Image (cartoon, rainbow, N blue to C red):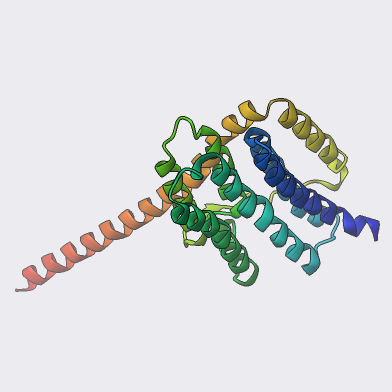
Length: 245
């Protein structure tokens, strides 16, 4: 019974850090708040792997994971961005964009739970990645105009509910014999995150935003390839028609 509860403990840790992130940003600690979201991402990536390694997967764990993700990667990043960058903007625009982000994240999770995806891929940008980008992007509020940050939140919201495919790394398992390493990795991440929140958060922004852009690039490449094939097919059909004439 205790073994079956271990994955849920990681999920609850994810939820706890999301709540702490919200508290921190309202206490003028946005760097540390963003770091809490990043560590929550680590826990979110671990809980499913632990469940599979222990053969402890359940519908309860799946639902708890989704509810936790809405808070940690939807609500918390939206508040981080709002507090540091949006308060001087038009209130209506700031409130609507802040609300849209977790709403799209919830829609993304609901779709993930009820619709079978493509093996090896997520359909739409996963909410942990979107939340990671949003919370770390917020740390650049002094360098990036608020209007650009506002537009970025809208784009991230759209990517979550889009049909763009993103690589799924969650199926990479953890050997049961290596389970003891997980608490050490999480502990080291927490210590580093608390000691160097600003530097680590900004460094991690780069791979996160590259992942978000990767899906866009692949989608554009796919559409361009389809358009080229259609043009080639049309040209071949026209040539054949002229030859027949």
